[in-house]
Length: 168
Image (cartoon, rainbow, N blue to C red; front, side, top):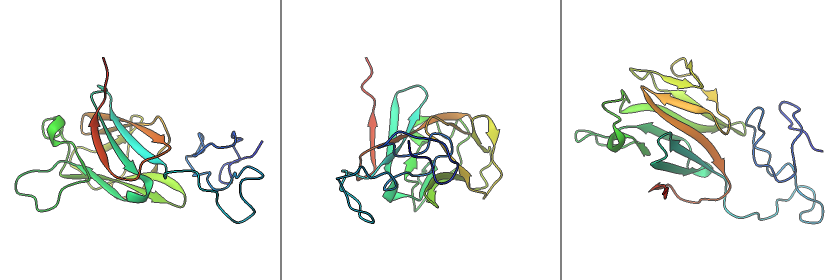
């Protein structure tokens, strides 16, 4: 069984990210016969980060090649808008800053950085220091002000999409 090059955690072939530390595992685990050493087999679209509101009503999908991406809330006086706009979902009332946090990809890992927001950024109930990137893992819970989102890492996605979940 292969192990993560960063933390040594064993993982199953075709796993995209290490469950322990969040390190990207592709193309480190090519299956024999699909690609020769040093080449990457085409495995479809790049992985994507999905931020799901805990209410389950909305998701924000960002392909990893679209990172860095700012999370915040737009307002009428702003000339630039965050890639993840939480204004329509109570962002102002829940304490989300206009430029609250940034998702980024650094050294093969998904990270979040609080952008000196007024009401803070939290990962799994731990407040982050401003302007210091913090690693994220699949399943982590983000809190921006009082608005909560679940982080999911999914295979696929080539463009930023925003859509409502189809829950019944």
